[in-house]
Each structure stands twice: as C-alpha cells, then as structure tokens.
Amino acid sequence: MKKHTMAALGAAAFSVSAFAAQAADIEAGASAFQSQCQNCHNVINEEGDVLAGRPNVRTGPNLYAILGRQAGVVDGFRYGASLVEAGEEGLVWDEELMTAYLQDPQGFLRETLDNNRARSQMSFRVRDEETAVNIIAFLDSLAPAEDDEEEAVSN
Ligand code: HEC
Image (cartoon, rainbow, N blue to C red; front, side):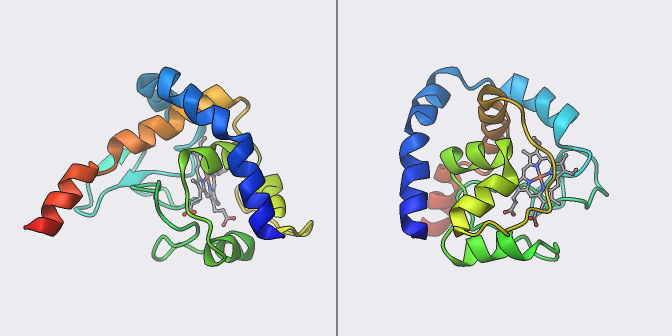
C-alpha cells in the first residue's frame, strides 16, 4: 500500500521537478527561509558553522544536507513517531517529496504511512509550491557539492 502511495506522490510531483529546474530561485528561497523557517530551524554544517538561521534554535531539526537523507534521523533531535516511522520505511528526502511535505506535513505523513492517525510535529505549512521549491533550492545550495564528496571518497 505504502509503495503505491510513494509512487503516486512521485508521479504527481514529476511536473514539480521540471518546474524546479527552470524556475527555482535561491535568493527568494533564502528570504522565504528567513521569514518562514528559521523560527524553528537552522542550517549548521559539520564544523559548526551556522549557514542559515540562528545558532540556538532547536524547535525543528538542523536542515544541513537534508536532501538525500533519510527522514527523521538528525542526531539528538526528538522527532514525532510518524516521521521516524516514515524514514524507517524508506522515506528519503528529495525535491519532490519535500515539496509535498512542506505544503502539508501531516497530510503527507498520513498518505505516506497510509494511516489517518499519523501526526506531524511540524505544524507549519508553506502556502504555495513555488515558495517550497525555492526554499528547497536554497537548502540544496548550502549542502556540500556532490563533487566534493566524490573527491573525498577517491582520496
Ligand atoms: C513552528 C516550527 C516549525 C516551522 C516554522 C518549520 N518547521 Fe520544519 N519541522 C519542525 C519540527 C518540530 C519538525 C519535526 C517534525 C516531526 O517530528 O514530525 C520539522 C521537520 C522538518 C523537516 C523534516 C526533517 C527531517 O530530518 O526529516 C523538514 C525538511 C523541515 N521541517 C523543513 C522546514 C522548512 C523548509 C520550513 C520553512 C518553510 C519549516 N520546516 C518550518 C518545526 C518547524
């Protein structure tokens, strides 16, 4: 059941990635992050540099290098059970899935887990897809480049 839902989400979001490729606006994403996300989240790299938001914000998890990561696994953050379960069942954040999540975290978890009692501890919703796509592009711009990782591995 869950697989179907994930596939359906992926298909529904297919147009999003085409849209994202054309129109994602990192600067608009940065200012939307500032006004909509940083009350609860920050972005801090492994060296402890604060790349976005403020240092001591802990309402939501650190969003450094969040794309490509399993949901619900930031060290030391106390997630709700539903998000952790979704991660354990294979939810890995990509642009499409995060775009859907940001617009309705609880609805997203209910659909992903096929469980109408799933709950999100993130009560905030981004109002439109374009803003979500821009914020995701901004977060991605703060993540380490894939090239660097490959280099690190081959060294
Ligand atoms: C009112 C506080 C609040 C705001 C505002 C908020 N979040 Fe969250 N966010 C949370 C909490 C709390 C969680 C953990 C959710 C859970 O455990 O169910 C979370 C989880 C997440 C996750 C999943 C992280 C993971 O490790 O799997 C992402 C991605 C995320 N938020 C992105 C955003 C973005 C982007 C914004 C701005 C548009 C935002 N959030 C705004 C509180 C917030």
